[in-house]
Structure formats: C-alpha cells, structure tokens
Image (cartoon, rainbow over all chains, first blue to last red; front, side, top):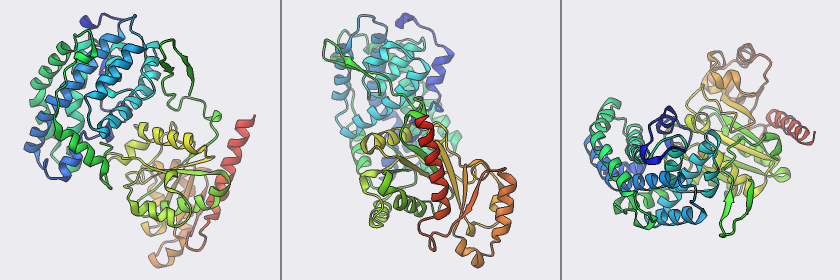
Amino acid sequence: MTDPDHATTTAALLLLADSRLPAGGHAHSGGVEQAVTTGRVHDVTSLDAFLRGRLSAAGAQAAAVAAYACRLAGHDSADGGDWRRLDDEVSARLPSPAQREVSRAQGRALLRVVGRCWPAPVLSWLGERPHHAVVQGVAVALTGGGTHDAALLVASASVTGPASAALRLLGLDPVDVTRLVANLAPDIDHCAAYGAEASAVDDAALLPAPALPMLDVLAENHARSEVKLFAS
Amino acid sequence: MHREDPQPDGITRFAAPAGGEAASTHRRSLRVGIGGPVGSGKTALVAALCRVFGPDMGVVVVTNDIYTTEDADFLRSAGVLSTDRISAVQTGCCPHTAVRDDIAANLDAVEALEQAHDPELVLVESGGDNLTMTFSRGLIDVQMFVLDVSGGDKVPRKGGPGVTASDLLVVNKTDLAPHVGADLAVMARDAAAVRADRPVVFTDLRGDPRAGPVTDWLRLQLAARRGARTT
C-alpha cells in the first residue's frame, strides 16, 4: 500500500467519488428531505445555508474519520482493537440513533462494493456494518489514495448528495444547484484540509467532534416520518 | 455469510458482504421482480401471490413504492402478509435507480428478510419510472411486468424494456377492456411481436383473485429453481 500521507489520486479514486457508485448513496438526502418538509430549505439560498452548516459539522467530522481510517488501513500493525476503538469513537460522535443506523447502512453498502472491486484483508476487520466514513477512508487507501484524498472525498460527498436530493425534492434548476456547489468548493477544500490535519492523532478518541444538533433532530424526525422518499 | 473464528482479542472477523456474488443456485429463494406502471395492479397481484404461495413456501415482499401504513394494512387485512414479512425501501425519488443501477438498499432488504424468514419466494415490487422499467439481474432471478388494459391497447406496441424484455408480461384488468375500448387481441398480437417467445398472460384479478395464469408460470419457475439446486 502507498504511503497515505503522500499518495496521488488515481482513476480508481474517481470511481469512489462518482455519484453512480452503486453503494446506495442516491437514496440519502442527509437531512434535506426533512428540512424541505418542514420548510427550512425551500430555495437555492436556504439550501446554500443548509449545506454550509452540514459541511462544517457532519462534513468536517466525517472527513477527519475517513482520513484517520485511511491512515490506519496503511498500518500493518493495526488490529481488531484499533478498528473497534475507531468504530466506538464514530458512534460517540453520532448521538442520534437514526444517524448511526444510516451511517452503518451506508457503510455496509459501500463495503459490498469495495469488497468486490478492491478486496483486501483489512476489510475483514471492519465488521459487517461499519460506519460509512470508516469504509470510505479504507476504500480510498485501497485505491491508492491518501489521507487528504479521503478527507476530500468525504467532505465533498457531505454536500453533493444532499444538494442532489434538494434538486429532486424542490425541482430546482440543476445549473443553479451545481453553481451553488461550485461556489462551495473553497469551503470543501478547507474542510478536507482540516479533516486530514485533524486525523493525525495517535488515538481515535482525539479525533475532533464538530456537531450541529439540528442535523440530529432532522434525522430523528425523518426516521419517525410515515412517508419518506429518502432513506435519510 | 462466511464467518471466521473469533480472534484472540475477542473480535470476530467477518468476510465482506457477498453482494449477490454468491451463486444464486446456492440460495433457497427465488427472487422475483414485479414492475409496472402505478395503478396497474401490482399490489393486488402481490396479494394474490401471497395468498397462493404463502401457506406452503413462505413469501416475503420488498416494496419500492411510496409505502404507507395504509398499504401495509391492505396486505395485512387481506390476511396474506404479516407486517414483519414486508420491507419498504426508500428510493430517493428515483425508483428505477434503486432496482437497476444501484441495488444496494434492495439487496440489504432482501437479505434481511431471507435471513429472518427463510422464504422460498421473494417478491420485489417497484413502480419504476415507466415502460422502461427493468430490474437488475443482480437483484432478482426473474421479472414480470404488469400493464393494465385501461392504459390503452397501444402500450405493448410502444415496447420499452419492461414490455419487451421481462420474463413474463402480465396484462391485467381485462374485465375493463370493453369499458375503455381496449382490444385484447391487438395487445396480444403487438406483445408477441416485440417479445419473441417470451410469454404474455391476461388476468382479471377481480374475477380470478388467485391470478391463475401468473401463478402457473411462477410454479414453473419455482420448480426449475428447485431442479437447479438439487442437480
């Protein structure tokens, strides 16, 4: 495996970032559906505010986790205890049970893809339903990417998926939504740099824990909704 | 799923999910996709199949339609399916994607139901987007496409993968044909023209609540599957 701190981006890595990756991502809105249902997000401007908040909390947290997992995947000495500790620390950063469930469902779906496209012994340490950001980080390592790639992939996905969900739910102009995400690019880059830097800790317990309680509230209310179009 | 022995540190190691790669002949269940436009009678057909096959072989259902407690009540009150045997998948406003391009959530739902109930028949229902509806072969073994005559007798002529490539084309609500001016002979002729030798059946679930032609076809599929497993 390549040195995770000095890896170069590969075409395989682009596959992981492709929204067509068959890992279930298309059916997750990251809280947008509930935000739309309650009127919090109703146009491009309110979507912009929502995505900025999401990036700063869920995005930054997941970016750090993915970068940490990417580095851990490169350590031959890492054992089940290390992966279990990381799993616990991610769970501790997701206070909403619905968020934890969604994270594990997406992690399992991605593991299914990674296990068949880039099989590797490290995957057997992750359990059947690992957290999404952990699998994302390991997948980046297996495709030859490094910690910054992992953080960038996750930071970007933390807003592009929800943006696409808003497009579908509100019937927004797709170019307006793309421009919105394009304007967020510097913030996504910044979030990735933060995540990569914050992941350079010896113990998963020292990973940062940025949070936005509204995302947990939205996730819990979504899980309780009778009719829902998205899984989150 | 293959599970290795617990390691000295107490961690049990797992193989990654097989993701449909496991040879389908090693599976007990026959997975059947049921697609077709909204209102064509898919849920009523599911109820009919549960009524016929449920008592003997155990049936579970995954639905990709917008699923309400009303829908669950419909199946439960018909006495055909307990709520723990049905699982609803959210498709993110793209029902077609969830059964064709990215089947992850459907696979998880199917595998969970199979693990819990060990059924011989798994029904995966989806309205899809329109006549282009088709299921991934990674998700199902055989698929049927359900049309109803009130959609117009020109529908089979339009073709589309749902009409042309499904393993069974079901033309439902034949009792309505006289009322909507649909010519069943035209539908049969047009369907045969675009479907090569693949079968087409005509049903009227109000007159035949056990969906005879469909259950006959499905019995053949189930028998073929049992044969494949034992050889």
